[in-house]
Length: 113
Length: 112
Image (cartoon, rainbow over all chains, first blue to last red):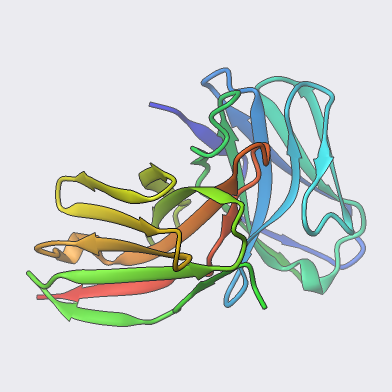
């Protein structure tokens, strides 16, 4: 079974803090994604990566950055957390050419206070 | 206007009912159509995946795509309480890389 693991289920951070969300997949997938999920807005793509050290902006990259130093790990960074970044964050991975079949992690519920 | 529209529900049905979940879309370039199921406090999991128009069946689940109407459906036969979840449609273009565009999800509750 494909396994996508996010480092935390729940996080509470203060406004202005730098926040790191970590994601690891164990199926040697080339593609990795970060989404946020908000009521009434659905899943929105923040960043994605096709390969190590490569990244592409999604629909809502403002206030976020990413890092992919190893194939299996994709990190989402909130440079200076704000209350409007309170959300459910979902990591996903997919094989090359199979990006339409994405496997998701369990999600990280981030609250910024 | 959103590229993908989906009624958020909630939709409540009795056990054994046939459930119809739907999405409409505006981007005629969408060629790949997916349905994901998301249980409370979990990540989405892929249920069905179809390319272009037509039907696809997998057990109690049937996915339909009508590209002329820009309308997709997921039917669940003999619904069970374990089907209670949020159902997300997702779509992708040919050559659109790996980007998926999601609907907002429909919350389904199947009651005993």
